[in-house]
Length: 326
Image 1 (tube, rainbow, N blue to C red):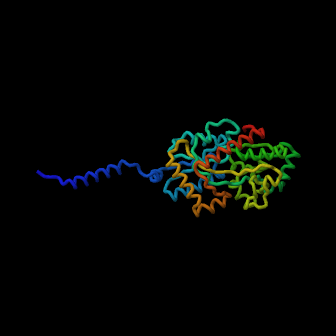
Image 2: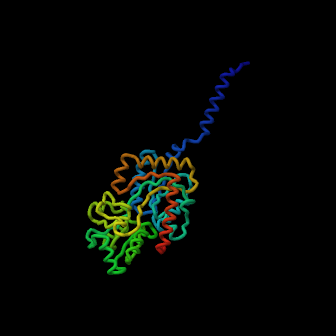
Image 3: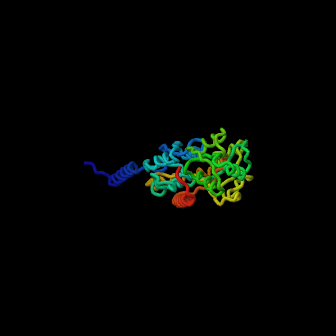
């Protein structure tokens, strides 16, 4: 009859318990995230400002974190199609949404199938960029005053294009009403097709986010007339602001990312960390600057508060200006 050594028995049991515990424990969240493909839905067409930023961030995060981040363009419905698709997605960090001002301006025009505060969890406010009213280099209009004078002389003859119900639409309509001019609105699914139409001679002017036109402004194929920013753009020092032109309105475009509501807090924190780190990456900074994008990095609840304030502001502007849904 053999007698078991109690110390050996104790250590064997302890080893078995440790092994069982390690097997039962879930993998760390970062490792779990790293093994997955993340869809970054962009409710704007390719070559737009949101698309450009999304691809820069996806490339940086993919390289730094070892994840596969796919940019999926889903334009349409004044960004509602892509936005609603993400609102219905599983809240597991596998699908996130690139948002800009249309996300918070749409509810001011008509009820949406999403709620900015309740349908999504904020991740990060990534970057801001100015709005610029542009004309082709061959246009006879050298200043915003000349453009407005022509519109005043020929009501409805001039045209501008942008996304309906967007912050760009709001900005140009504010300009029209403050200047008492009639310029025909032509709707587009995004700025890239509107800019293409402008360069093809089918529009008189476009109001665009800087990334959509920055290369054309640098090459001289487009001319900037006025910006809606609070101060002049460093890269376009000769372009005056709305306020300098006598229009009391100021707005910039924000670009951020959100996740479906009820995404686990740990997953949100990891996503916030990833985007925050990539915004500061040495290889990302010059890419953003080249596109007229200014890093912000406001993440979590403060970003959510910022968007809620914008919803209230746009709703007020739309009501006071008497704007209707397009």
